[in-house]
Amino acid sequence: MFCEEAGIRPAAATVEDVVEFLVGLNSGTSRATGRKLSLATLRIYRSALNCQYRKLGLPSPAASYEVGATLRGLARLREESPRQVKALREDRISAMLEACPATRHGRRDAAMIALGFAAALRRSELCGLVVADISMERTDGMIVRVRRSKTDQGGVGQRIAVPEGKIVRAISRLSAWLDAVGISDGHVFQTLGRGGVPTGRPVNPGEVARLVKRYVTKIGLDPADYSAHSLRAGFVTSAAAHRARLDKIMEVTRHRNPATVLGYIRDADCFADHAGAHFL
Image (tube, rainbow, N blue to C red; front, side):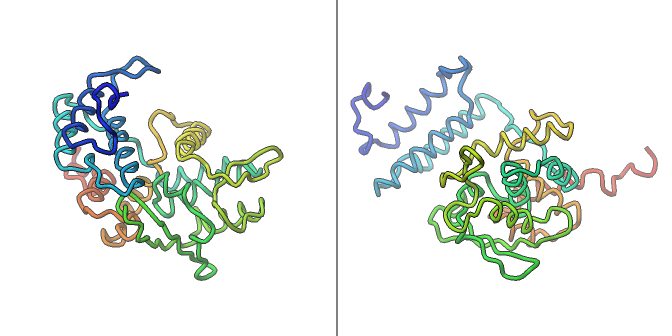
């Protein structure tokens, strides 16, 4: 609609056109809720534009520095603080896994929670996994290959080592799910039809947030405080609390900027060795 009104061919849009588009969205409201569009929504629009230009094999004007600077400027004008969901530590992950029923849906939920946490996966990475991405290196460890991610837009691929462990047991839960439904190729996490039969279609990434909210509710937590990112954040926070080295944490999370990981570590350590611990 924007391109039609402005008389622009989408494939020929300029950086200035994208800036004008995003500024216009910033002043608009959602048709569904009537509320002002969030900055996260504007960033999703930018990502969608980048994706479309990649499909066309064209350089994306939305990927420019000017567009990024515009979004940062809009954030300053709004004075919005980014929403931070709570991290799910290993004890709460364990409780959520215990709450998963012994059904096909329950086994799938348990495998998604366990692997999402143990491999610190983003929701799109979790739902995008295919069976060929999973390699059982040994009985107590597997390698998960993420073919494309936020920090690997070129699709080079990133490998994550996932141990079985004693609490989360991601390998056992994943095997239980795949064996229960007989999935040997295609997407690892598929939607289920009647009778719990896999459809071949991957679970939508948006469903991961709903899954997390459903199970945190079952263990008595407020679902408003948690989302799909709580699994990834939970791994980082748990690792930091157990004194894992920064470089080893980043091997799993694949963060490029140590400052991002240090933010989680500071949250985990804020009461450890507190200056007032012995007199307050």
